[in-house]
Image 1 (tube, helix red, strand yellow):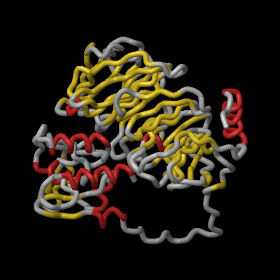
Image 2 (image 1 turned 90 degrees about the vertical axis):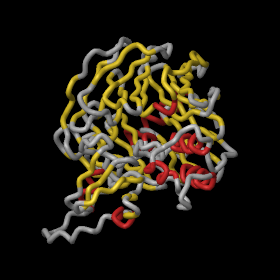
Image 3 (image 1 turned 60 degrees about the horizontal axis):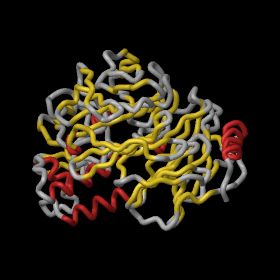
Image 4 (image 1 turned 30 degrees about the vertical axis):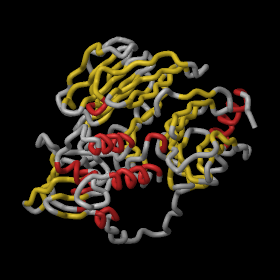
Amino acid sequence: MKKTAVLLCALYILCLFCGAVPAEQQTLAENLTPNAHVCLLEEDLFAYTDGDTFILHTDGTGLCKTTYPADTVLRRGSYIHAVSFAGDLAVIERFDAVTLTAEDFFALPFAARDLYLWEHDAFGYTYAVLQGDSCTLQVCDSAGSLAGDLKFASPIRGIQVLENTLYVFLDTETRSVTLNGTVPAESTLCFSHTEHAPYRMLTAKIHMDEEGVLRTADAELLNTGHAALNENDLAAGEGYIYWKRSNNTVGRCTQEGTSAEETALPGTIEAVSPCAAVVRTDDRYILVPYGAFASLQPTPSPAPTAPPPAAPDPMAGELTFEDGCLYAPAGLTASRLKKILPGADILKEDGSTAAGKLRTGWSASVNGTVYTVVIPGDVNGSGTVNSMDLRFLQRILLELDEPDGARIRAADLNKNGRPDTGDLVLLAARLAE
């Protein structure tokens, strides 16, 4: 049943302040294939890719389709930016967020295989970090032309736009860049960090680190217990932070890190927002408003007791040493690996100390022996297994790229000694899970 914008707003307010909403559910998409995945969920917008990429309003009005299947879809101000890869072109398609009409279509001045990180702002500018030049933030204007750059003293590990600020995550600090529709000339220190590098900013003062802990610049707020959640598994709004707690539960807490609660939903959660989640049931995406949240806080013990012995890290059992390589699961961070392997040194490909999620091609010195890190599926060495790896593997099979030994091992998912179409099938199936 279609909802008017007024009803959607009312549901949103009721959800936030009362903790419950009418049990209205709305089908957003039907007849999905196993490869379908959500690209974007906001209070009024939803985007998903299933062969093609579709963008629609969550109240059932409006629908548009991108020219090419999109790798990412982001809303920034009044624009929706869809990034697609057509051969070796990185294509930007820009839509009006209200009317969903196409506004611009252009290719970035970088080869798709060279793009490592990218972001957009409300002025239509694109920010990119390239493979092999990780200390430079490239800046493209609203027409996609290279307009300038901004240099940093250490490699850029991540970038994120929040309102009119670009946050740049470096090895030991996070810096901010004020956005105003021009090429930025400088950055400002936000906060320093050693072990607990940010994964995603949720507000100007709160971030989640790569091990799933909500933090301010100088304090731990709450450990969600879920390391390096995907972008669509996190949301912040009206004093609360929401996250995908399990396949069918959403957790939330106040932005002070208190009053942790959860609510169960009917289906597999694909994305969360401050008032509702998208769940998948069979071949449908359904928008489900949150019901009542129940407390997650444990009952205090009547008397202090000795803490139980620490449980072994479950990722320890997924580490494998083979032929001079250390095979590790995607999402494992350098700091967590050091806890599993005390005394280990983790280095980037340039020899500098590594932090954050492990990447294919890094090295680990364990008991005096140096191993090359291999993350199965992380074919492009970004530390995350996603559709970019699938495209890179396709290029390898077409002999358009000649990767090094570590990336070949990361691509060899069926362990037959070489990348082949069987690995392509296995990687596509993994991304569809």
